[in-house]
Each structure stands twice: as C-alpha cells, then as structure tokens.
Length: 364
Length: 129
View 1 (tube, chains in turn green, purple):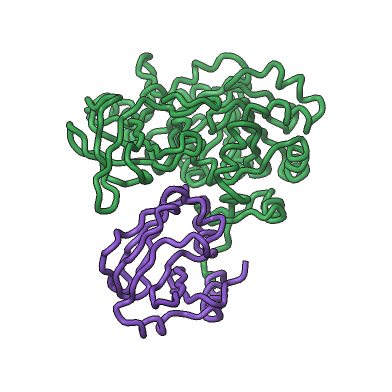
View 2 (view 1 turned 90 degrees about the vertical axis):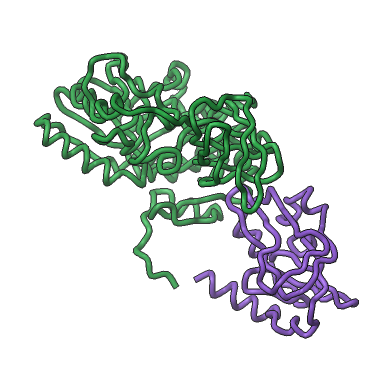
C-alpha cells in the first residue's frame, strides 16, 4: 500500500499506460522506464527513430530587457556565444562555491526572450535561485515556468523523416535547422538537440496537443522509448547526468565540463572566483570493463595515482560490454588499466576517451 | 504468466524444483526477471560451495540493476549453469527453464519451509500494491 504523496504526471501519462509502459517513480514523476525491452528500445534509437516523453523537464522563459546581461552573470558558459536567433548553448549554473546547481540549455530567441530547459529534479530549486538573483541584481525580468508545454524528443537517424511525416509543413524548418539550433512557430518550438548522441529534435508543444502529436509520430514510425534506454543512450554518448556525474558538491572542472566554463573573457559570473581559486585534482574519464560484469555508480576505482569512483555505469547495448564515467585522479590517461571493486572482486577496466558512441558508430 | 504449480518459491523470488534424486534446481522467477528487465550478466556460485540458508550466492544483473540471488535452503552447490552465464537473456525468455544452479540440501526436510505456488502468488500480488 502506497502512502507517498501523489506522483506528478506529464500530459502523456495516459498514453504511456495505454502503450503498456512499465511506470516508475522517477524523482517524484510517474514516468515510463520501458515499454518492453529496454535493449530493443536502445537499438531502435541508434538505427531508426525513438520518441521520448521528456515533459518532466521544465522549459522556462526569461523575458525582459537585458535578459542577456542577467544570463551573463547567472551561468558559467558565455551567452555572448549566442548571436543568431534560435542558437542553443549548454551550460552549468553554479553556486558561489563553484558547485553545480544544475546543467541546462539556453535558447536565444531575441534580446528580450531566452528560453531555458532545466532538469526535472532541480526545477524548483533552479527557479528559486534564479528569482533570488533576479531580485538581488534588480534585473526585473519575468521568469515564467512553462508547465503548459509538453516536450517530446524525436531521436535517431530516421528522426527527420518521422517528424516531417507526423507534422505536415514542418519540413520547411527541419530542412534548414542546424544542430543545436531551434525555431519557434507560435507555441510550437522545435530544437535540433537531444541526449542520445544521434541526430534528432526536441519539440515543445502545448500540453493538450501532446497525445495527438505522440500518436502521429508513432504512426510515422517513431518507437516509444523509456527512461531506461534514455540513460544507456546518454552514457554511450558521453553526456553527463545531473545528480550522478556532477552536483552542488562537485566542480564542473572535475566533471568533464571545463569546455562549458568560459574563463577566457573577463565576465564575472556566479562561482567564477571559487573555480579560479580551486585546485583541480580529478577528472571525469571513460572506462570500459575488460573482465565480465557490469560497472555501476559508486564503485571504487583503483588507479596508479590514487582512488576514484564511478559516477555512472551500465551495460552498453551497442558495444555489448560495460562502460562507465568515473571521477579519477589527474594524470591517469586513456589506455591505462585500472581496477574496479565490484562486490568482493577487483576487475580490470581500461581508461578511454569518451564519448563511446556517436551517430550509431562505436568510437572506442 | 502463471506461476508453475510444481515448483517451490522463496520470498526473495527464487524458484526451486525438487528433483527425483533429492537435489534442488534453483532459478529466479518470471516476476523477478520482469522487475529487473533485460538481463546482461549472471554469476553463479562455484561447484562445491557450501551455502547457508539465505546466503547471497549468485548475482543477476540487468541493464538497469544488479540483484543478489539467495540460497533457498542450506546445502552444497553441485552444478552451475554455464549456458545461462553465456546467455543471460535466456532468463528473460523463460525464467523457469533458465536455471542458475543445482544444490544438495543439507537437510531434505528444509524444502518444507519454502512457499508453494499459491503462497508465492499471494506474495507477488501483495507487492503490486
């Protein structure tokens, strides 16, 4: 008998149930973990087209004069890289200690409208932080959470065809939309972004339109994909997961995210001073297990330079072996062998440069 | 999927078949594999290992998670299924055919402590709430 508070649901909840999804409590959200075989879903995205309900993530509109100035101070990456309408930027939002409050995507639409997409589990905390900064800095911006929108990711080599077929006329956008760019038409918002390492789109539509849109995408050949495969796909693609690979206690510089932290310009952003004063001693590295078994989060890693820990681990359906991201001491390099403690055994793993898989191809 | 009436069960979702010679064949139930999802790794106890009742003795891992398998009664491992280690997905295909290991119970009467199919069915139903 369940005594917990009611789970939050997305506009596609009934659709998932009709499709026979196995539903799980995912950070307070009632979400599909799979619709059958997680491995088959994984392969469907690498070889065809998969559909993901990512409506638990929160789109957040920032509107007002000098939205850009606000974001310059708020996030670690530099929004001045965004000069063309629709362009997207991946960034961390840091606290004063340089820890990661969240990782997010920022879409630049015009000088008075930026759209952010933040993680589900951190959405409330993110919004509170942004409102506090908005007040402290007197920027007077309107921050609007868009829970009236549903977000569907359409991912895989066949994604463009599926989206074009499901939504007549959208080919005018998909044919010109470059990776990491978005376009808005009324309340519909289509971005060429994703979390799988494949070509594809993340489409935001009004919540009430989502079930019809999802069915149209399925009729065009898109396969429903649960959060289980979403995790193996993103890990093969070498993409961080907030709460596992980084959090408020870890530096982006020790989380494989230095490329997203702009320290080249003079721009003062929250967390910058702490990062500049910090000593980086660890790195996020890829591991491939050489022995039989499965790497999992929190397993201890022994290297010649000291110990580290796996942050995310799984069995890679594409590579048919276990892979992981691990936070290990600097100086340990690709090609080095390390030992991972799994239960009572020490198993051999090799350090590799990640991503492991991109666009259907194994890179290791 | 129905729960085979000729098998015995544990609350930790192992199934046990009592063979004609008194040895026990052990696997995990259909319900257990359904909870775990696609199986990718199985590690069985070594032949000759002596187990206490409830001891962790095998591991099954799906893409999603690792799960321990517990000795249903005390006894000695007399065989381990290498085929299921080579093809972990066989547990998903037919959990009651893909046995993990066979054991000789220290005390044959201990088998009486296991659940029958009706009791196990009740347990599965109660967990669904």
